[in-house]
Image (cartoon, rainbow, N blue to C red; front, top):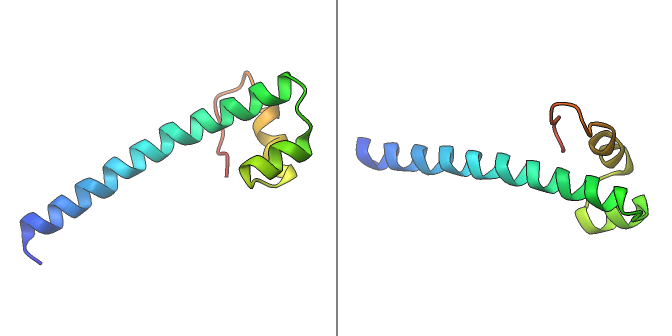
Length: 70
């Protein structure tokens, strides 16, 4: 492993973190929208793999600064 290869790998990791954060926010908004539209919490949990507690936290955070989804 040379310095350039290590730097490339580290940059790929940072890019992945950025994409993950964007997707986390998008999933949280999709959960809030599903909840607003009346989707049962059970169905949201099944679709996302999140626990009921995680879904409640995300839905409750609507209007607040986006909090961690998972």
